[in-house]
Structures are given as C-alpha cells and as structure tokens.
Amino acid sequence: MSTSVQQRGAAYDPSRIRHPHFRGLVTDAASAVERIADGDTVAISGFASAGTPKAFAPALADRIRAVRAAGGDFSVNLLTGASVANEAEAMLAEVDGIALRMPYQSEPTARGKINSGEMDYVDVHLSHVAQQVWQGHYGDVDVAVVEVAAITEDGGLVPAMSVGNSKTWLDVADKVILEVNSWIPEGVEGIHDVYYGTALPPHRRPILLSRADDRIGQPLLEVDPAKVIAVVPTDQRDSASALTKPDEVSNAIAGHVLEFFHHEVASGRMPAGSLLPLQAGIGNVANAVLAGLAAGSFSDLSCYSEVIQDSMLQLIREGTVAHASATALALSADGLTELVDNFDLYRDHITLRPQEISNHPEIVRRLGIVGMNGMLEADVYGNVNSTHVGGTRIMNGIGGSGDFTRNGYVSMFLSPSTAKDGAVSAIVPMVPHVDHTEHDVQVIVTEHGLADLRALSPRKRSRLIVDRCADPVFRPLLHDYLDRAEARPGAGNTPHILEDAFSFHTRLAATGSMLG
Image 1: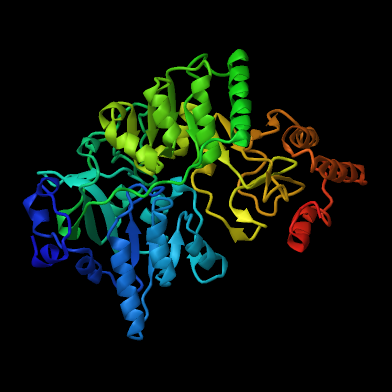
Image 2: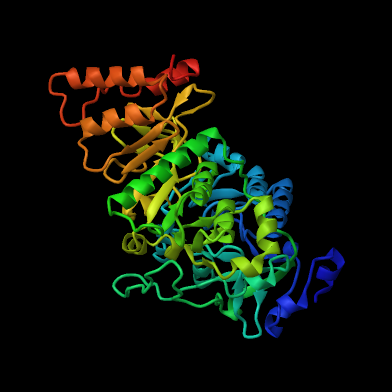
C-alpha cells in the first residue's frame, strides 16, 4: 500500500483486492484524479445513486477548485448510467466542472445550470446509451471511474449495487480508475449477470433471455489490466434514494392499477395469479403501486425493470414476487439496511444486469412487460410530457420510460391529477413537450380513475381522459376546450384550437395557476 494511502487513512481491506497487480495500483482519490485532464470525457458508474464512486467527485471538485483559483479552466464531459448520487453531481456542478452531461440527471444544481444554458445536456433513452458511445458520437471516453465490490484473484471485477453502463465504460475507456468499496456486502458476488454478447450491426445475435430470472452472462465485469491507472479503496454506503410513505393519492392510484390488472386477467389478456413481468419507474407513486400488489390476489410475480425499490424487497420477503431483474438497487435508508441485513434472502431473488439488457427494447417486447412510469402531464389525446416543465425547462430526463412505453405489452402512465396545491393540472389541452406520443401511451391513471385508451379514436380518448383522470376542478375547462375545438369547421380527426392549446400553461406563467 502506498504511503499516501496510509497517511490519508483510506480504508483498505486486502481481501477486497485479491490480485497482486491491482494491489500495486492502490492510491488515494486525490492522486488518481490527477490523471484526469481539462476537457476529458469521463464516464462513471452508478444508477439511481447505487454504485456511484464515493471518492471521485470530492477529489475532482477539489482539483477543479484549485485550478480555477490559480486562474485556469477545468471541466469534463460526464457520462453515467442514469442519475448518480446527488451529492456527487452537486459537487461537480457547483464548481462548474461539468461541460456536458448525458444521459439523465436528477440533481437541482445541475438542473439549474442546464436550464440556464451553462451546461450542455443530452437526454437519451437509456437503452441507446451504450450503442451511441460505441458508435463514437461522444468522442473518445478518456477515463472511466467505476465502483466495484472486489477484485478477484483472476482480475475479475465484482460489480457494485448497480451495473448500469459499467461494462461499456470499462470496454471503451482509454484509462480506468477503480474504486473498491468494502462497505458493499461480500454476498453481492454472484447476484449480477453481465452479458458480453451485444454487438453493433451487422454482427448482432439473438439474446436468449425468455424469463426474468434467466441468466445469460457471467457474474463478473472484465477489464484490461493495462488500462487501469489507479485503484482507490473506499468504505462508504450508497446514498439513499428519497422515498416517502404511500399517501392517500398514491394509494388511490395503486387501487386503480390493481383493478385494471384483475380486469386484464378476467379478459384473458394476462395470466391469472402471476400476471406478466412488471416494470415500474423510480418514485413514490410507482413504489406505492408495487406495495399495493401485496394486498392483491397475485403471487409468483416477476419484475423486469431498471431499479428495485423498497416495496420490491417487501414483495420478495412476503413471497409475492418470485424474482426481480433490474440494473440497480434504488433504496431508501431503511431499504438499504433491510437489504444488507438480509442479503442471503434477497440474493436468490434478484438479478442485476447491464442497462443495455435491462432496458433492451427487443427483450421488453418479447417478455411482454407491463410498463408503469410517471409523467409531468398528459394532454387530452394521450401525448405525455415526462421531462420538460412548461415545455422548456428540463426536470430529470426521459430515462428508461421510453424503452418500456414503446415496446411494452401494456404501457401505463401514473400521476397525481394536480400539483402545486392544486394550481397545476396533470391533464392539459396540449402538452408543450412530447416524450411519448399518443400511439405509445395505452393507459393513464390518476387518483380519480383510469383511462384505457386502447382501440379508441382521438375524440373518444379525449373525453375518457378528462372524465376519468382530470381533477374535477379542471374538468369544466377541459370540456369547454374540447367542445369549442370539435365545433370548429374542419375540426379534423384530432380537434385543437391552436391559438388556445397552451392556455393552461400561459395562465400558469401569468398568474401562478392554470385556473387563472
């Protein structure tokens, strides 16, 4: 171990770095980030906080601050799996250390700089990230910084509590910094299924995955030892994802979803008991919907999703879910404690995969995934805006919602009917930014009801969405809009009043309320 590591008191568990070559590269984070240069493209591990490198961001932020104090410039292009730990992103955003960000973010400081034009942001379907990086659209990846749980005797890397894009980063980066985190339970080894069979056209082959619990890869990540320039030991738990307990609104949404599932079973469109594999986006509403499954008559469920949230652990523990496949564990502080304390139970029911597999459109289509995702707003015809407030200001990003919406067996969007204490309606005449078109959105759910849009014409969809999903306070305004639009000469198949279509948003901007 280097003197600098001893002096700085870095955690170093020799049993976590079992290969002699990598032991010889052990150093501290400050020394490691000296190998990162201004203008570099840096790809880091992490997905929904899980697996974010712990020492990298503070060390790089300190270096950027020092360079700026000396009159120099320093920023990097930052590529990730999805969101990373908020504190890590905030540290780099606060020192203006990020020139370009891709593919998803959820941290307020970075969001503010993106919306002010100080930071470039590329919002990408998560299933597209690996392919676009391999194709060279972001140039060379100069440095990959990847958190792992251990390095084996043979030089294999035990992934952390997420896989995300770690496989791709290790493959394409010119240089690699590994953070070996001894906080990660040793039992995590074997929970991952890292598939190395993907390729660019025309060399693609079928991916032989037909069930959520199938294993098609290997438990370890691979890296060329010659590319590894530093190994940084850490001992720090993952950041907790923010979750609140289900409230009256989210429980009502969950009730409508469960009723819909029962109807689909009765109609012969889903298997009784086990349904079809479920996907749920990140957030309190999705967490509540999953928790509601415990009260239903379902069993032996499977999930094929991006993340595993607290409610999923409960469903596994109670035997409702037989297996959950994802790319990351997005858990609250209590959820992290539950997972670590009972890892022997959960490891047999969870598989973590690279996000190019967890979000793979062909797999989503073939498995018949039921996709449940959140939204900012939907319009009366079923177009969904999930990313841009007022049509211009990014919130987080599209993430994987498009992967599951366009390709799922059933695509559902869930949201409270209002926001900002009732001043903002989630149902509007026309969304000012479209992430998911009416062709892909099949079901919309709020606390007031569920609108099944399948096989309905635009005019029938519009009335159903307003009557079932809009808050009663906003329904008269929405019906008035539709009445006037349909009464116009030449109203067409999808009636709109273009000069009035964004009236909800213009009222909000002028008065602070869509009601005026």
